[in-house]
Amino acid sequence: MSDSVNAAAAFGGGKKPVIRAEGLVKRYGSFIAVDNVSFEVHRGEIFGLLGPNGAGKTTTMEMMEGLRRPDEGTAIVAGFDTQKELKKVRQAIGVQLQSTSLFDLLKVKEIVRMYASFYPSSVPIQPLLQDMILEEKKNDRVKHLSGGQRQRLAIALALVNDPEVIFLDEPTTGLDPQARRMLWDIILKLKNRGKTIVLSTHYMDEAHILCDRICLMDKGKVIALDTPERLVRSLHSESAVEFRLPQLERTDLPDEERRAVLAVLESVQGVTGVDMKKEVYVLYTDRLQSTLTDWIAVAGARGLEFADLRTRTATLEDVFIHMTGRSLREE
Ligand SMILES: Nc1ncnc2c1ncn2[C@@H]1O[C@H](COP(=O)(O)OP(=O)(O)OP(=O)(O)O)[C@@H](O)[C@H]1O
Image (cartoon, rainbow, N blue to C red; front, top):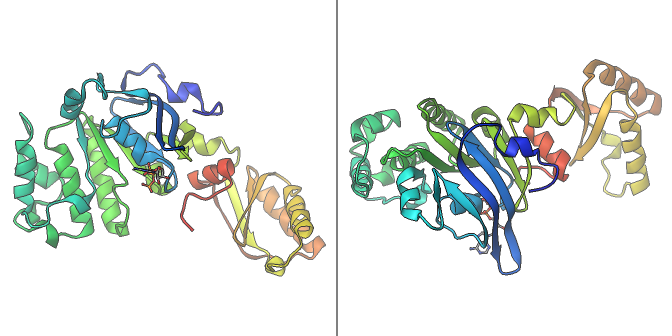
């Protein structure tokens, strides 16, 4: 874990952890996919692993689930060591499988019954299907379900053994907005029932809405860990002012001219940071009104014509860009 990570936020806070990951490392040849990752997950929280593709979220999850052996470090889940007491870990957790690995030809109720038969005890199937809004689909074959219904079925299967801890790996990837929101409601309901949920995602809005705490990952490392609110506050910039400068949108623009513009932007009143993404300039500020007023005056005085000006509140995406210089989203 990097030094910048708030140790108090990563560990303890006085609460009893349900998961304790300590110094997890996973290597593939000389490539380090997960690099000394440590954190605790508290009982009853939704804990998010947020990062771009390839950040190491899935590998970290799989080491906690006991599906992948760490090269170094330990993961204790529900009181059991994933490397020494895997059977007990399996009883205590539910893992949402990627829906592509479901048996397409089985009916919904058949596959749920089959999964239930793997465990010594299981929850009643009818209410489980109702909770996952699949009651009407119970006699349909899996191959006829929509993307959202398949994801809800994958979560139902993760819940058949009434687990204490649920792992959801990118549960809403590829879903339309309505299906995503339906899944968010289901995940929040599970939390309200006292379940501990570990969720990986590369959607910052999803992480912000669902997660009590977020572990921000990049290139196998934890780069920040805190509540969404505190992560955004750590930017010391509540607002972002965005605009384009069409005059400067030339590929042959000399570097010194680009640097000179950035220096001008940094000198605008109240600006705490400047980023540039594609053609869009972003000014971060805690004093939106002074920054806007001064920017308009500075732009006028320097003959800089701006376009598509807009203001917005800062987000987790900004935190990620600020820390890594890159965006969470794939370009
Ligand atoms: N079996 C493997 N052999 C070699 N490299 C691997 C293997 N599994 C994962 N990796 C690499 O490890 C890195 C982390 O992968 P991981 O799947 O954990 O990332 P992720 O954050 O979950 O990303 P995604 O959202 O794409 O799943 C990636 O660069 C990936 O290519």
